[in-house]
Image (cartoon, rainbow, N blue to C red):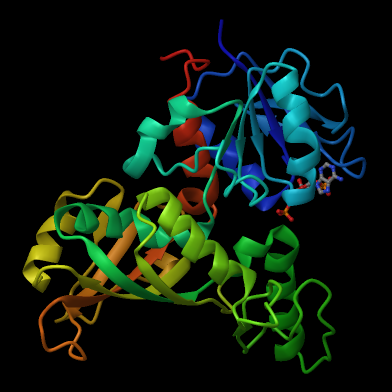
Length: 339
Ligand code: A2P
């Protein structure tokens, strides 16, 4: 029998992509349970041409469910993921609630699919900025250990949900019409502006939560507590797909040709690196694509020892950064009936 799949947060930006990704990849679903808040209960979503009535998430939502995909925020995951596990479901959680729990595998299938079998009911989907950096860095790290990496992000509105995407569009329109727009979702004006990532800033360290997630999750996923990670996370007025400038230093010398050759073979990576045409990874090209686009591969001139490389990457935050990675994990579960 095909599995019963629940989507928690089905009306959200990631929720919509769970449905689209399962459809696109031919993920077999016996029955879909569409779950969201009371606000959405009774409305419908379309799955494989059929309307599915949205139910309000509750204590009994997971009875009979085999696989539950969560993307409704950390608070909802904390409360309902254990309930889903008790009901017999395997949870793939897109929130940060369980990522650093030592009993919860934190999985990017291209890197550590082997960890899925350790799960005790919950598997965590990593932070989107971490996934975007780590998919291309992993094959390099395996050949020539990365000692230190510095990441600067250019993060899209999609990472903050559907309401933030709407706010970007509405505030841009208001700006162009000469109207005053008061931000409701984001902490600062978003149109024609950019700002520090909208997560809490640690008063001691000065790092925002997103940055702390990237540092901790890199170490957990790479199983390398010593890798040094420096990161600055910024929200930019792009609707969808994150970009990152990445500079890394390896244990042994490394050339840009070596990195290019590794990237050409790397799963989940597409090289976009045309110097003559000045054509490199852009969010507009990454949007709707499964691969992490990698380009601007070049020697880091600030390290004359030849151990360091800089590059620029772009990935669809809603796909590889969220829904696609989660569905890839679900595809590897035994609950899944292979097509
Ligand atoms: P709803 O649309 O009913 O509010 P996004 O990440 O795009 O902001 O989406 C958040 C998702 O989480 C939406 O599907 C939203 O449903 C859902 N959600 C928010 N609060 C709750 C809640 N209390 N119970 C269930 N789902 C929730």
